[in-house]
Image (cartoon, rainbow over all chains, first blue to last red; front, side):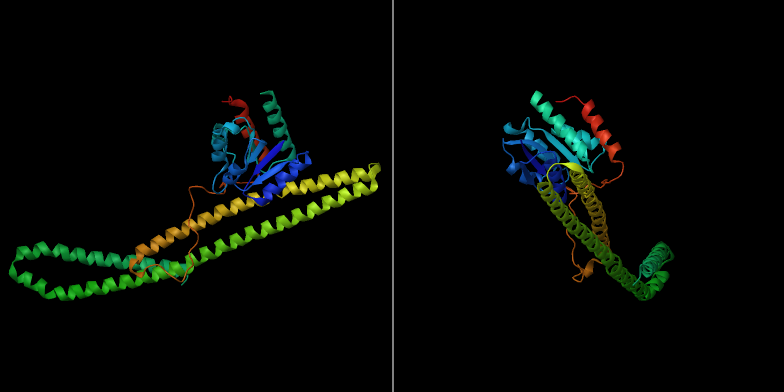
Length: 124
Length: 225
């Protein structure tokens, strides 16, 4: 399955990519913001991990844009951000995000969320 | 000029303005009396008018001088310090990013070396356990480097506050002395972008588990659309 990893921090992208590779993910596409991610997204992407605060297009607006596309209605979106106020989390949920990781994340939490969302997507 | 001197100048400016205000008030209070007391009193006031105007002019010149000094003090102490601090914060962000990427490069090489050891020594024995433990340690270090993203957001927030302060001070200087125009001596910092900040003002490495549990609760308790 192809993963799309979106974060404006190159360091964070490297850390996430490294974590994904450790759990066996090899097909990974990276983007530095939501705008670039929209250009790189297509039907072959099976999972999205996105940051919230990014230039040009943030994670919440990106999620809304993906959900508005015919080929983006069911792809799992995992928000990974430092934002942890309850109202922020609800905003993310309402934008179409399927689950939420608060930075700094642990590899186990990342794996658990990916497993749960992938299983739910297959079942759904 | 020091910030203390700047405060003194501002205080003196305010005191001078009060003095002008009082004298103008006294002049205004004298007008009805002059009208009632007849032409003689009117002539007396008229005779003293050049002196009063000269006095008012001197006070106004003094106020303007004080305001110019205040403006200069704000520009050359406070604003300069803000800009210096802002650039230092950007240096910190850049230095930590460079260092973090250097560490990540080194960890990638270390992982490659462990892979080579795997190829050389095969699957058996304690050596494999040690190599796996090394991989776990490296992975732990990589995860810990998330601090760089979080501290960068904290620094960007602090920088944004400084930019906001600078913009407000520059506006204040324009109010104090609009005739002086914009200073060419100070470099202009990038404009504020409040509409789409690329940082979280609440970013922290503290209480991760507690904050994650809030997110988990929201996602588990809210029915899916």
